[in-house]
Each structure stands twice: as structure tokens, then as C-alpha cells.
Length: 317
Image (cartoon, rainbow, N blue to C red; front, side, top):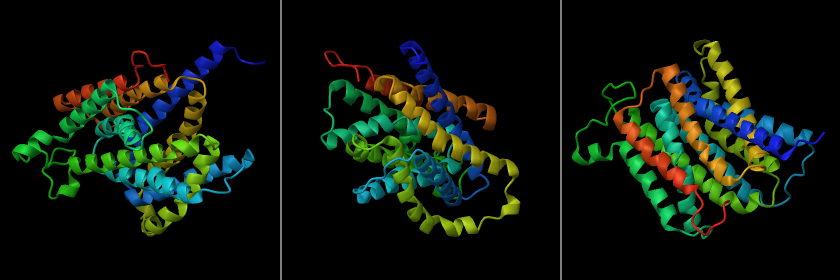
């Protein structure tokens, strides 16, 4: 029995909510995992697991693999998987889940800027305001004002202690996550054309397959150096859930929703992801929203919302 349009839309919205729950809780889960596992080792394990799942599903469904374009797929694997996850895990080890979710909320704005530079999108006044608000929000989050006056208040760990070195600071973690967001934004911009002609599942599986040799070179020594006895059992359970959930299941749910809902609605749901991340972080790790973070969140999320509101005379996407 075929579902009615209303039922199909309801299921798509439910799938989209599931995506935000998975991604939103992932920030705190990644923070917990990287407290016990080296970020490089965990990134390697996650990518191997993701590749096995996605390639396995593609094989089971008997998808046709690309015959050409593997050079571009390798570049996409480097940007969208290897650098993306390496920088994120290294950043979340030093920063907080709330900061991570806010920085990642700038991905649509960064993708827009790259799209304009690559000639894929036209820059309008509303889009410019959207990007500007994102920049203002991230500047507030990074404490650019404190850096400018040299107060040194930014030189602290996420626990509030004075950091012995810059690499231990929240700011360093935020910058790494910002690099992660930038790599992912470039990945989206470069994958736009190939995504229009290639099945999304096989494209994702191929990109993950290309990423495995690259991450293996960097990460296998770190994996072999893991002290298994020092890693609690709940960390391995969390790792397995992340591989199945935010790495594989979230992709399938997001694809289901994208095929049935307007792009503007899908984009706006990133706001939900921040709410989930902030709530999870408060309950799990006791993170709180200070005044600076509230200001940053207001600017970033307002800019994000403007990005997905159709402009006058323009059709909704």
C-alpha cells in the first residue's frame, strides 16, 4: 500500500528530526570518546567502520560503481572525510560541544561564500547579511575582542584553567573545528556537480573507500598504540553507536528527507541540531551557555535562518 503525500511528508520530517538528534548528540559523544582515545586513532577507527558499512550497503543493493572520476573522488575523500573528521575530533578534544555545534552551523554560510567564488551562486543582499552575521557570531565566540586588546582571557582550557600552551586552549579547539567546517564546505562546493549525476549512496561509499588508504597512512600507528586496558567499555560502545548512527544511519535518513522536503526546510533544521547539542552538553558534561556564547548563537543562527528564507521574487528551493 502506497503512502499518501501527507504520510510521506510526515515520515520525511521524522527522519530529519532523527538526523538532528544523531548529529546533535554526536558532539558530546565525540568529546567523551576523545577523552580516552587519541583523536587520530578514533578518526581512523570511525572511517574504517563507516567505509565498511557504506560500501557493504552499496554492494548489497548492487549499486553500479563509477568507472571514471576517481581522482575527484579522492579529493572529496580527503576534504569531506579525512580532514573533516581529523580536525573535528582534534578540535572537540579541546573545545566544547556547544562551541562545536555553533562553528558547524556556519557551514551553509561558508558553502555560500565558496559557491559565489566558484560561480555556482549569485550574491544578494540577504545572503551577504547572512554571511556577515555568521562572521560576527564566530568572532564573538572566538573572543576576537580579547585577542585585540591582549587581555589573555582567551588562553584557557575548556575547564577554565590557565593553559600551559596554546594547543590546549578552547580557542585552538574552536579553530580546528572551524578548519573542519571549511574543509566540509569546500567538499560540498566541489561535489555539487558530481552529486547531480551520481547516486548519493554510491557516491558516499566511493568517497569513504577513497579515504581509507589516506587515513590508514596517518592513523594506523595511532591505532596500534592504543592501550586497550585503559579504555573503558562504554567508550567502545559509544564508538560503535557513532559509526552506526552519525556516520551511516544519519546519512540514509538525511537522503530520505532531502528527496521529499524543500532544501530550505532541511537547512533550517540545523537550528534544531544546535538545541540538541546544547541540551545534551548541559546534561552530559555540565556545559553552560555564557553571555558570549548566547550572543554568538543568536548571530549565527539568525544568519543561518536568513540564508534559507526565499528572497522576494525568487522561488523557494
